[in-house]
Length: 453
Image (cartoon, rainbow, N blue to C red; front, top):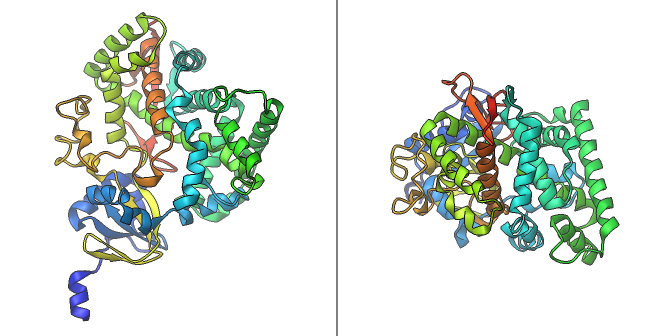
């Protein structure tokens, strides 16, 4: 029996690492490429070690497709990885940490506020916000720290569109709060004693101050808005008032400040990477300039206009392939199950490496090349099953995906239309960071030569 079991369920291979710290160095340097190389060597299932924690990695197309199956939904849960965040806020649950019916309930409440509908008809307002940010933070003759400037732009955009206010004075606090929580409590790359630092405590207090301000602002206008005027904050607060057991008072601040936690780092990192990738490829920049000059020459932007900027969309999608923010999803096994011939045991901690196919020649020929035409028919390389997962996979696919697609396209179109940017020096090679989320290093800056329009 033991021999038969070892044939059916062979031992999961371990990726070799350093004493004590295990695979920390590879994970800190480039987790996406690390998972790719391990996948090539060991197949779709392998184990890694990060300090004292051991994780099983399910990777590749196999893993991406598994997340969308009924077996995948029934075999995986998110709770453990997000419980530290929930406890830190004194809450009971959060959207990212719930599964099954509980997750569906919360997703239903928030889906309108995070959807493309939230921004439909407000494209020109988004452009005006973007212009305001460009005039404020991207002045001619200066060097602009790109990720930081994008964090302010994202906060301005998400705050105005999703919550009705742009709390720019809280950006540094939100950023610090996210940094500590993700590093210490979610990815567990840093020790818990860091949460005792005054820097973090001040930032956390400020985020709670922001959350309480949002609650107070809601009650000032409660009952006076039409359904069309309501935003994400209204939907969350209305649900709380209807059924406090569904969203109790203890969960309000975590849910109300959620757009900043979800969007600040991810969108800022992605837009920062887009700026680098486009400026690094002058032929792409030329195509984008031609597109956006034609787009904005006509005046107000309507829904149909978004179909006329394929180079912009291609640049966004290609950047999200080469510089994925969602490198892997963290899960726990809810039960014993078999994946790719290996037995996964209940309560095992897992990484689901959905970005691995992004870098595979089999799906994206010449995968290291920045090729914005991959996504147009007849090529449409991203449409192959399980190969392209910039927003994650399965039940926890990013709720703001359709909103982000519009936000990214219009923000980048407007930035390249307005500002004459260049890398300095021209041969600059992007330095990246991985904590708390992958993206360009905070030191990445570009030169603003002037305004094009």
